[in-house]
Structure formats: structure tokens, C-alpha cells
Length: 425
Image 1 (cartoon, rainbow, N blue to C red):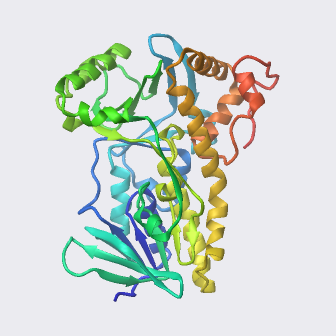
Image 2: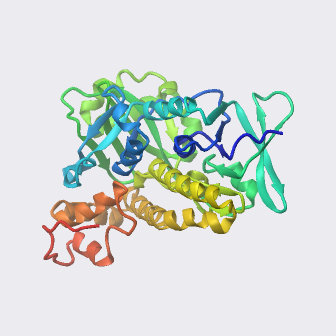
């Protein structure tokens, strides 16, 4: 029996690692469990939005990220496949210093968070530790059962709060009996990190077509993160077929011919990752003695560009609530509800926004594609609507960026007398 920790966090991903570090920096004894044998590695980059940058700044991480780890981007251009530019989103519209996105090299940011976590005297990070179940006392969660390195007897760890940060398929959520609506989207993304095309500026490109999407995001080290949408059900079969890889390379080259040279470095499927798209909606995020954060509570489609950022935001709010609970000695669901109440509005808005974007950006039928392109063009002419949409992507608002009237204005069906205004949010 081990009772050295106030908090046990199951999962050392984007939310779990941030929560562990935030708690340890306050001197709160915390144990973070990670079932992988070591820090995660990936072939993809990631985008850190302004709200995520603010959190990294609070943790003392942002200032220590070198140009080898992150690359600031201000402009994101949307094109119709085979056609002209539809719209450009410029982060320079946002208040400084949070007026850019950061593209990170693989897991450079996460690695630094984990190193800082491991160095904290009040924290421990256990790799190779698999969650086995929950402990309960008097009907309340009182700890976890974990097996380390797949060997020996399971270890019982008593604590005041268990936090499930173990992803969309969360075993902690299942153990708590929290009901979840898990929706797996039809499409996911192939991801590769390739040499950056010659002449490509530090501006992202996003191509939309009829049932086809390609994203190109400049990354540190003169690289480019390449994302290409494919049906999720085809991925397993595709990865056994070399010709499928060659066909995808040819298609990407036809969409953006500057990628022909970089794609010559892509030889095997081992160089390609796959990002499935899942949405999770749960009826509650807290129970007596336990809480859920990140994808375990509310996974969302990556179109929102906020999945990891929302896990980080969960972690920071929950850290504040945990500090209050330690002061009062109350670890009940009622006390923890302050966390859920603070976070649900923004999460709900972003999940809905991501679903709306998925319906139109992924569309193959001509009517939705026409509407999508028309709205993009309308927003390109409307400074107010671009700003409102950008504040949502940047994680700087909790209310929907566009009203139904705004949608009609973006589509050109109504005039907008405030098109050049810069609204507050």
C-alpha cells in the first residue's frame, strides 16, 4: 500500500503531464502514471495555439523553447483544390504577444514538459505503469491499482484524487462508470514530416476539395508537416500496399506541385503516421474522489485545432480547484464541479464548431462544397468575421464565433455594415 501522493494522474499525455507539472510547481505531491515504457515519440509535428502558449508561459516552458523546437506562423491560407485561394487567416490580427501559432517539431514541447515534471521534488513519473483499477472506500474513489513494467503483484496507491488523463478510450472513465458517447469520424489523417519545399514561406497552406483535404504546415528544421485526409477504414489495408503510398504521393503532388521533390524522400509506410478522429461526450467529468480531463472527458475533431490545448486548459483549471480542495479537505464531486463548470462552455462550443467544419470541409457533394467555398470567400472579404473565427481557433473565446446572421453574411446572402470592424471577445 502506497499513500505518499495526494494526486494520482493516469496518463502522461498533453493534459496529464501539464497537470502533474502545475501541481508539482505548487508543492503538491503528485504521481503521474504512463503505460508506455518511455516518453512518446512520433513522426508528426503539432500546432500550439495562443491559449496553449499562454499556459506554457505560466509553467515557465515557453521561454525555453528554442527555434529548433518551435516555429512561429502567422498566416494560414486556404485554397480550393485545383483552383484559387479562398481565404487567408492572419494571426497578426490578434493581440500581442499571442498573435501567432507555433508549429513544434515532433514532441519537442511535450518532452520538455516531461523533463520539468521529472525534476520536481514533489512529483514522480512512472513509465511502464498500467492502470488496473480503482480503489474505493465508503463509496468514494480512494486510489488506484497499477502494475509496473508488467511484472510482480499489482500496487495499490491511496490518494485523495484520481485524475483520468488516459485518452478517448479512457479505462479510468470506464472504471468510474461515467457514460460516454464515442463517435469515430469516417475520415482521419495520414501524417508525414518531410523536407520543406524550396521557396515555401513560413505560412501554412490548407487545400479543400470534394472529399479531399491536404494540409502543409512549415515546421522547425526546414521541414513541413504534411497531412492528407483518408477514410479511416482503409488505413489498415493501405499500409500493406506500396502502390497505395505511391498513389497518395502522386495525388499530393498534383494538388501542390512544390511537394514533388520532398515526397521523393518518402519511401515506406514506416515514415507515415495516422491520426484517427474521435469525438467523446460524457455526462459528467467529476465524481467523489476523481476527475477526467482532456480526451478522456471530451475528445474533439482536430478541425477545431484545439484538442491538446483544451486538455492543457483543463489541467490548469483543475490544478486551481485541487488547491482549493486541499485547503478545505473536500474532495467530493460537489467541490470538483467548479472545474467542470469553468471548462464545459468552451469545450462544448469547440466540439460543435469542429463538427460544423467537418460537415463542410470534408464534404464531397457539390452543394456543401459550394457553400463552403462561398463562406471562405465571404470571410476573406470580411475582417470582422475573420477575427471572430480566429479567436475561436486560437482558444481565446468560449462563445460561438459566428451567429446565424454572421453565417448568412459570410455566404453573401446579407450585407454586413460592420465588415471592417474589429470586435471584442
